[in-house]
Image (cartoon, rainbow, N blue to C red; front, side, top):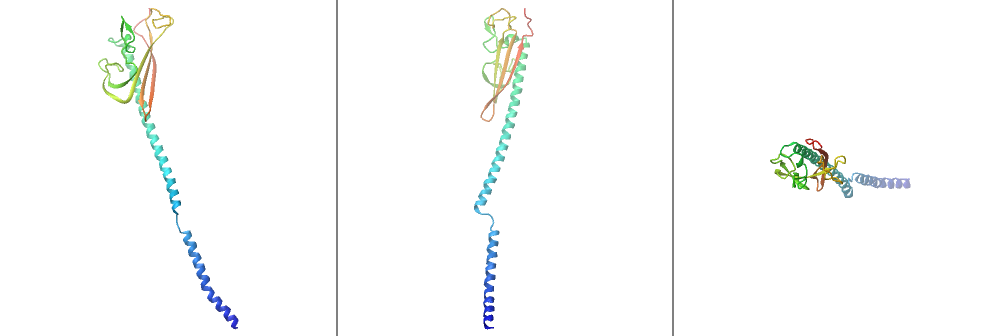
Length: 208
């Protein structure tokens, strides 16, 4: 009986310690579970967020740039078309006529050059000047920023009616000219080109 009592006493003495250990273990497990994010977890999360934000910003910037370049390209097309219209108008004007359809220094008439259109790349002015034709030396007004124009006019040889510009020169007048109008516009640091090519004929002069 005495031994049984001692065993029961030892069990009763051990129970609180076991309970304390179990409680401590549960508290430790709970703290580990509820410990939250570590510093490394936070840094990884911030890095992923920054990558996403930067990618979104780059996409938005690229969209704005493409939209801006699209607007400039549309303006360049309009400028090229208006220049072509001016060249056709110059051909039909009494004060200019066919001889004026050429670059400055070309189309000699009685030894004097009759070409009216500027050569090379030039700034684009908003006013067409007194002759009412764009691309000539008397254009006035403000200069369009980030836009330049080049007009190139070349005589075309008609083998059946050879003129002075043909490989075998003839006495016929030039009846056709190739007109190339290039509008250069500056995008994001780069110059781009919008080009229109057309054929102009001397509709007021019948070949002999």
